[in-house]
Image (cartoon, rainbow, N blue to C red):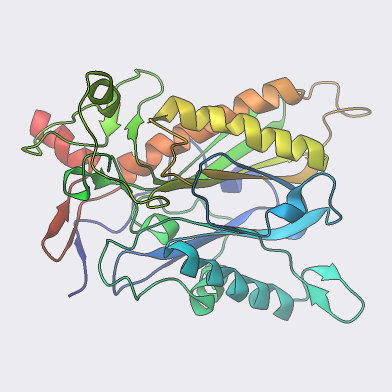
Length: 349
């Protein structure tokens, strides 16, 4: 039986979007058979890229080539997908779509698109044999636009859950969210798919917004406090969680700087998720620089430096993470009903 949901997505955010960054497009594919999907972030003209894999159970593709010491300087897209390791196949569809448009590295014998990818574990949500494949990745590219992307139960966020430390039956709906920050003529945007083991926290109030619920399901448990008072979590399967994301900027960056930006951006996850970067999470953030605005040299007199850029990235990530759960809507798969943040807020009211 297909999953039922009170809403499939959420209107564009007033907090901005990753597509505010010049040269960035986003497309979602959401499977109608069960809550899963993929999201592609395209940089058709190429972008200098970096990555920071902070979780202990990642599922990734083509991340080694983003190391500053390795040859490839630019990527042409990043794929985020559900379906656990099987979902990495979605990147093949993006490669085919880009190749058909002659976008990629010139390798003399053809055009080779570079599409790193990372996946999250959404297999408990319905028939686990249904997961993103190359056709799904291709469809996400077909849907890509410069418009502000949909948020919530779409794309890579379709089957995402948060607050699973005390069992899936006490979890809440995760999702995908976006935000952007502009300072001194430079824009940094983030797109985050939140499938965290921990709770999602409002970074401004430090209060849980979505996550593990009390045994009767009526209120948030507050996972951090529960663990510190000695509550025992359920046994966990490694890799069954993960928050994925892409940070993009129109600044001119080197690969070293792009990798540093990805690293600092994890501060945003730490502000908005607790616990984060656990042994059961595969938290991975990519950074893309489309190179429109110089940070150094002529024309960069009013541009922020790397310290400010890192602060902007962490802020965009924290906001996008919060947006992901605020935009999410409840979903029912078989006998499992997963409420969303809006449900608990309505109960409080």
